[in-house]
Image 1: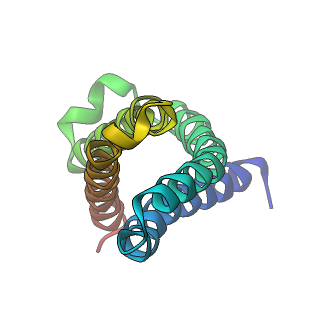
Image 2: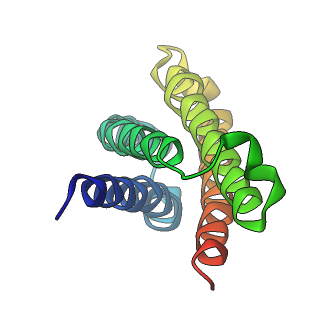
Length: 155
């Protein structure tokens, strides 16, 4: 396996871990925790967000670094990307990934700060709603990215 194949492997593995962690939190963790008492739910969310944040940061870093390497290795100038369907799909994919990064940052820094606030039980209902809303947004952006990937590869 050549060096180029390692970038592809790192990119795909990072994407699976990143989007997979978002979908797991949204589709498994959120419904399970929804029925728990607020104090327990807050504590569990804090533990899970901390655990998934590390995975998401590593996975997103792998996606961004390998994606940049792949884009820089394209056989034509970047300025030509908007002129082809492939290029437009690639740009849309990158925009979706950038949106996921921004949404993830809002989760990691904004919502987590609300959850960690010592007066947090008063703000917890709002923080929990934002957490699920931002996870849904990040998952939706991930679906756009996957659609672009499918179209790029002829799907």
